[in-house]
Image (cartoon, rainbow, N blue to C red):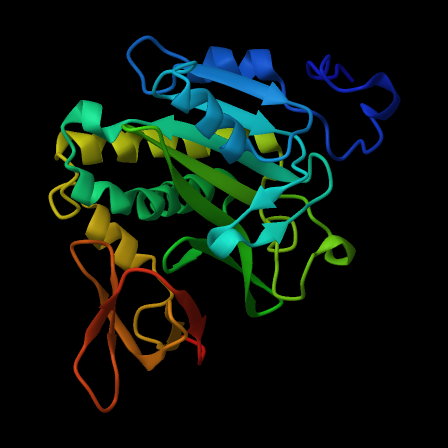
Length: 291
């Protein structure tokens, strides 16, 4: 067997898990970096605290251009929404961040809030084609897979501003995580969901190509989620819509009702049983009943 380029992985643990070979940086660059495409640079590091933190720092100093991709084989201080922390074994998933500058494409700032949802659509559509697995999106930024007849969270997305004109979007996806490695009982992975492909390189290529297509189409529409098809595609794949939910809102207020739509600003529209509809732009959403 000819190993992939793992020169940046210490020799004593490069093949500590033969089911989890290192990513080949050179091959990924050859397949993803094109002069007329979105992705401008790509780096794979063996370990870091957070790819989002690192890329925000680089972007804020002007060290990287739009389309920079930073991938880590392992993260020691990965963060999700609401500053939640999580960890995973080395090379068990895809942990990466990308730098976007929608203002350079004349996308108004008020539409940048669609970027986490766009990333979810790109992740879901990329995995559906490459891994042969059914996915669903939980508003605003979780990817769900079915494991043992139950919905499990297999990926999360975090978007952060980087300087005056940049947004860093980070994705953490569980690929080969085994049942005994799950951080919580509600987590899942592509392997546990019976995915046909768990080789991380073709999965990463598929997701980044999907991301590129959705982002450039959205930018061409100046961020209009209707014209670009983003709003309709997100709604079609959103497991939150049509369900009873509890929204735990900033300030400690709970809102319970049916999730009926995602509006033009990317907010979740909730219809309480005894009051007017409300659009929620931030908060923790709990599904109260199966779809």
